[in-house]
Length: 95
Image (cartoon, rainbow, N blue to C red; front, side):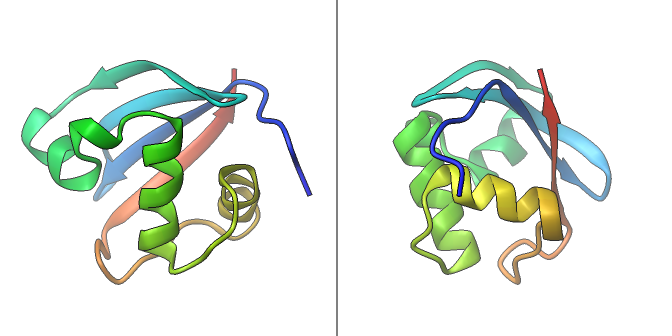
């Protein structure tokens, strides 16, 4: 189990087109880049674009109580899939 996150870039894609990206470090979300405001607001509302908001929203989408580091590990291992946004994909890269 991972307790810390060391600079991981999350890119949210709809039908393989980037919508927005952000960088997650230990307890922080930075480097938010938006490609489409309208779609980004649907996927992750502005008020949730912080560490706790991202963690809670991914918990909701994945129906889990895991911590954000555990969720990111799960996405890296198994990919991301949710019936709420069936064409949403999250790519994770180290930065």
